[in-house]
Length: 139
Image (tube, rainbow, N blue to C red; front, top):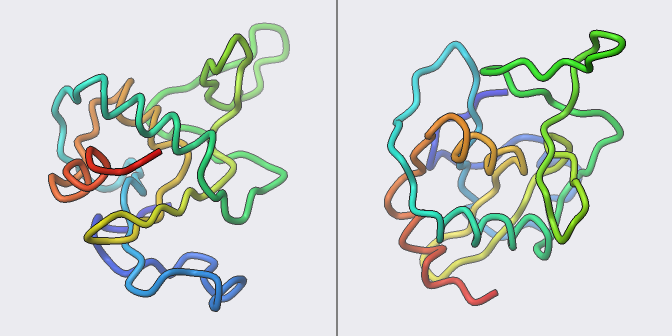
C-alpha cells in the first residue's frame, strides 16, 4: 500500500480516531509502482527503528502479512510467500503486520513495521526531517 511520505495519515484512521496524535504523517509506505529515494542509511537509524518496532505503540496489528513487493521470500518446501523476518534478541519477529505510531519533537509519524526491511535491504531513504526527529527521540 502506497502513501507519499509526509502526507497526512489516513489508513485505517477511522478505527482509532481519538487515540491518534493530530497531524500524523506517513513515512515508508512503499510499493513497486512508485519510485522512492534511495541512499544507504546509517546503522544508528536502523537500530532506533528496530527499537521503535519493539517498544512503541503498534496500531492495528493484523492476522495476516503484507509481503515485501521488492523481493520474494519463498518458503523452500511449499513455495509460498514468507513474511520478512527481523532478528530480535535471538528470536525472529515477522514484519508486515502492523503500523508503528511515534510522537517526536516536531512531528508524529505512522509507518509500517516493514519499513526497517525497506531501509536495510532496499536502501529506502526516509525524509531528512524524520531522520532528524528520530535521532533526538528518547527510547
